[in-house]
Image 1 (cartoon, each protein chain N blue to C red):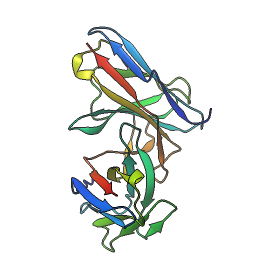
Image 2 (image 1 turned 120 degrees about the horizontal axis):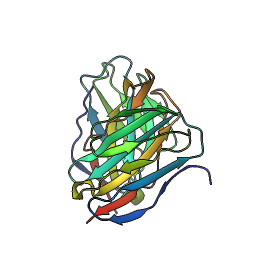
Image 3 (image 1 turned 90 degrees about the vertical axis):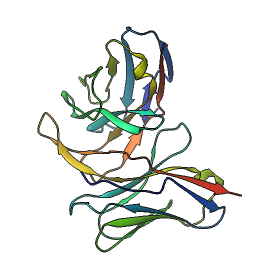
Length: 113
Length: 117
């Protein structure tokens, strides 16, 4: 299906575990983003990528790792999950520049126990 | 980065126009104003964007003041399905590790719009 998809939609993991959230888009958009959303904080940018093999930190990158070996995929890895990383995670993509709209996935609700 | 200020909440009667204000007094000349909305638990949805001129699409109209320090999103005939959090965003241009410019979207707290029957 065309669009941007995130998987899994829901995930429960234990403190200290490594977990990877997947994001896949079918438009060949150059730019991809990861956000987290918590009550009282709105959407905060974790990492972004301007193209394959080009990534950079956003506002809250600590504890997260990203990679982008292929244009269409932008996985987000929590190397050692903590309770403070319990959140809803959104992936987004945009064609490029700052005059184009961004498309968001439906989100992954992650709970760290 | 230009910051935006929005009222935390607004109400609107169904069928009436909803006018959502946004202040962005520090906006730079090449920064666009974007509006997104987020309906409960879903990913944000693009509504409209503009630079200087007023813009209209099938969803809404965007009115930007001449000095570009503020804007208003207008939903001409609000429905119950328009109840959502509306975000006004100034699109920031920046450079990543590879030297490539990008348009980072930085979200504020937004306005909770409640449309009443």
